[in-house]
Length: 287
Image 1 (cartoon, helix red, strand yellow):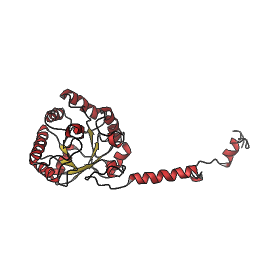
Image 2 (cartoon, one colour; image 1 turned 30 degrees about the vertical axis):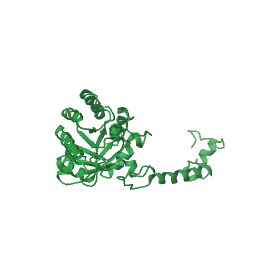
Image 3 (cartoon, one colour; image 1 turned 45 degrees about the vertical axis):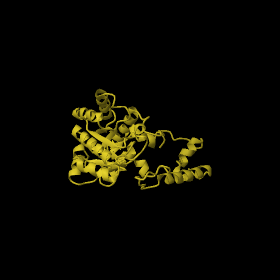
Image 4 (cartoon, one colour; image 1 turned 90 degrees about the horizontal axis):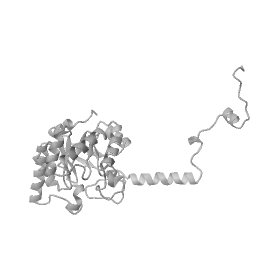
């Protein structure tokens, strides 16, 4: 796969090609996703729920995302790397947004950033894009605003709310965003948004009409037994694979079965003899 760029991602919409995006937070996973031809890797603030043990994305810091983004970039994936700007890392001022988005590229190795929200955020998007940093927007359910939204609730269920979302999408497009995530909205609403804009829409819990789809990798691999939202399809049961392997390993260690000779290093007879003083080393002048 040739390296993906924001230009190529935008072209995929005009060519009618579906876009594949997944999250990654480390180098080995990023390499696997790249080898599989994933178009975009999102280093998401979902790292808070998936790896750091938080109940939401709110506690995730800019340093957290930069740390994981840098790990992903060191895998040198062909996928486009998107760094997710965490809570309050870009909304204080345009200057703050510019400085922090620059750090995401300079220190994190991201090739674009994702900003949640619209309205005042659209102006920030415009400023960041004008500085030469590509921006992916994010509308619908915006997890960084869950306290304001009243929890993880489907957005855009009414005509009025749908019209607001379409307006937000057009604002982000006008601001220069190269694509946008649409999260947790009815399929019909996502279809209207997708048809209203010229830039690609990436859905999560937004039905089949978006230009692409994104899921949190550990969710779709089944790492968490108790996370089963309607929009999530689990393509594997990694938690069960891990449990089986760990239980087998534990049994073998406790039973003295592992490590066995196949997984141990042995000395030659001469090395063993020297170790225990049973063989005298030859002198250098001895023939």
